[in-house]
Length: 126
Image (cartoon, rainbow, N blue to C red; front, top):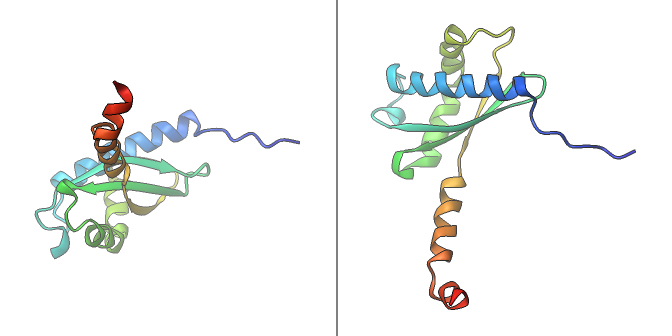
């Protein structure tokens, strides 16, 4: 029997997007008492929830990408507080555990642009 890998369900996508929207709002409106997060603008690019909705991986990128690892560590330190804030805004039977990760897709798109603009590729295109 073959195992068919399905993508996320409609519910997972809906919940993930709702969580992403609300967490973005929290980052702009709520004062998180952590010196590493003071004055930092954080983009929440995507949230992926597990099929059982118990875990959510939050992909973030600080504006400019500066001190990214330090900021992800600070978010991990404050995830209990952030989960509590989210639970006031998003009404789910269970609020997923949050796991913060640096979104490296921004780096990848920059590298792709760099390669496409390189002389070697330009020669191939002529």
